[in-house]
Image (cartoon, rainbow, N blue to C red; front, side, top):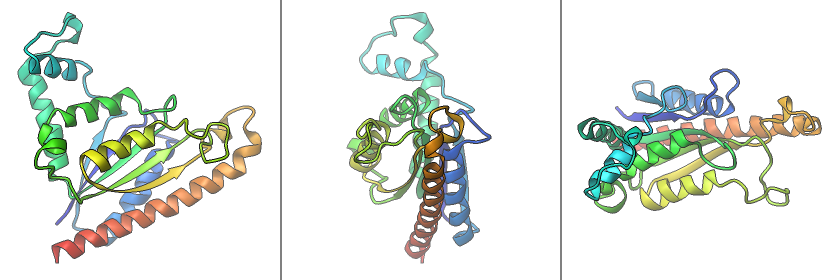
Length: 222
């Protein structure tokens, strides 16, 4: 029996494209792997305390966080970080649903990643996640493809690739929908049809990724 760790980052529930793409990937994974376990962490609805990382980082260098507002009990911070690392270690695959906010990842995702990296073994030691699959379900409000005015402005996807592929050594599959803000943003009306095509194609990709990952895990377990 395999475990899928699903992490959602959107602050929206209804209408969230990244969540919808992750739903497609998860449904396809479960269709192939009905006995599999899905562990959920919703960073959008339940963000991690902003004081965890400053507390742990200061303790690593033998200092106290400068401001009282940056402090929390060290044991509590260590327990939170240990739980996050255990979730990642125990996952046979990770499904990460992330919207592009202000051309990058939101603070809730950065905090989660920073706390994973506090466990040096994940990226710089035995690297237990090497070779495991990860699916990125990405929603971008605008267009960032080659040839568009904002090509290169997506700083979220490359960062996630650096962490999960280069540091953790995971095998990445990405389903990305662009122009997701076109239906609700004045001035983007002419891009609505393109946004629908992009989202539809991204759902197909997400389903594909979920199916392939599930089959790979079943094959490894056989």
